[in-house]
Structure formats: C-alpha cells, structure tokens
Image 1: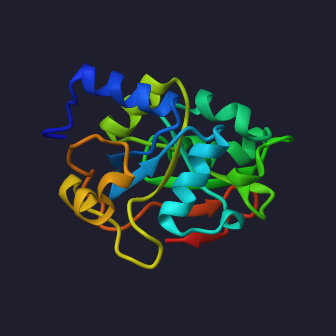
Image 2 (image 1 turned 60 degrees about the vertical axis):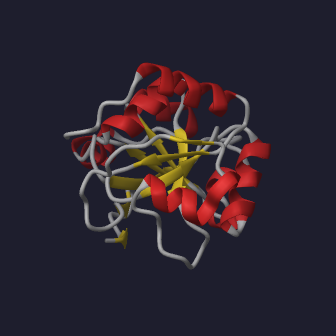
Image 3 (image 1 turned 120 degrees about the vertical axis):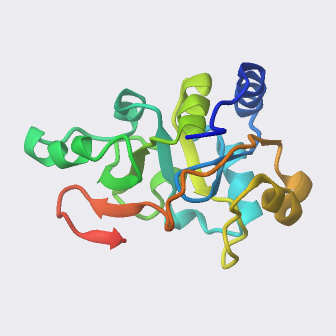
Length: 189
C-alpha cells in the first residue's frame, strides 16, 4: 500500500502515548480508528466519553497477530476457529467468547468480544509497537460520520486526541464485516 510506511520514531511516540493512557487516531482498512490500551480503564473511559458511546455496547480489539488476542478470548474448537483464522489478517471482525475475568468495558453486556487481526500495515505496526491489541472504534462522535483521514480527525476531534498516526486507509469502502464465530451469523456486513 503506497504511503503506508510510518517512521519508527512516530511508532515509538504513539506507543509511549498508549502506555501513558492516551487516545491514538490511526488509519485502518476503511476509516480512521481511535484506540487506546484495552486494559486501562481510565483510557477506555476517556475514549467512550469522547465518542459519547455507552460502555455496555462493548468494543472491538485489533491486533497484529492472533497471539496478541489469545488472553482476551476463550478457546474454540479447531473447526470453529478455522474460518476465523482463514479470514485473517484482513477486514473481518469476529465475535469470540470473552475470556473469564475480562474487564466489563471490553465486552459490555455481551459474553463475546469483537476481535480482528488487521492487515492494515500502520495499524498492525502500532499494535506491535505497543505489544498489545488496541481498542479500535471509529474516529468520530457517535451518530456522526467516521473520519477518513488525519485532517478530518484534527478538525472534528481536535485536542481531545493525544496522538495521530497519519497515513492512508486501506481503501475498503465499508467498515469490517462482523460475524459470530460460534453461530456463523453476520452481525454487520
């Protein structure tokens, strides 16, 4: 993807921001996302307040690889996991059973957690730099259109974002498909 290289110092600064509870805007497969440390309640709460999003809806986690997501989910059978693993990396989000003891703010009122192994090079590099999956939600206030670029993030969300990784989105026309791994139901297409 042209223009998808990001300078290593920017990734280090973004990872430092992540570790200190900041909110980061970054390009994903279709839109700009907002992310933070999924295990830092203060960071997640600030992100939810910024978006005006209720905590009971739950959140999506994106990762650079499946190993980053394992601690957040319960294992499934090999047969159930095969379609999930075959779709990654890519713009496919799956609802998987949430791990016991998972913080309530990640799964919300659900017993599943929405997860994706991203194929966007900047989002994946950010996840690797942070050594963690990232909360990933659209860069907008709920009910408004998601930001498509860094300029829109700055204009719409301004100084409420701690760090912006500038780069192109992946060119997808719509946000990722969401499927339930156990039932196979399509939640969002």
